[in-house]
Length: 216
Image (cartoon, rainbow, N blue to C red; front, side, top):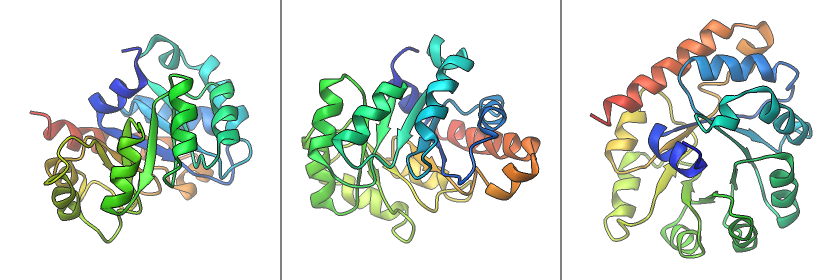
């Protein structure tokens, strides 16, 4: 599976790594991959994300053989997008609608998951060429919002992010979301600092199992 977009659409869960300290990134990624997750995003909120992404692309065969994909999030400008792609990001994620970032990504043949919240923003992101529209922040909106938005716009691929966990993942997917983004509920900073890799692997396994339940 060499297409990063297809990787996300097939596995349906994007693990979001937003941490202050990325020194344990290799062990974290190993735990996530061992737990069955195949789409992983490091965010530019950490200045080391670019260098870490570049290193991980070389370190893990899964990101080269197409069985997993590695992206960079919190992309807010064309400069961010260019730096992320140069670092080896296989997909980009934005927290906002930026037609400039979407255009830059399309020019570099890199899938982009564009952040949006309102129906107007979602439509703008999708018609501008976003591969997927990240409904963010989804916390407080709920699966019903996804269903309501898709009623008049069934062609749009939506990925709710923010507040998604094992308790509501299935409901979001059944409402029509093509995938979900999961951050703090999966990549817990305390667990990472303590090196509780088995806990993170188990959390990943639970999310993967819930996503698979919606595919049968």
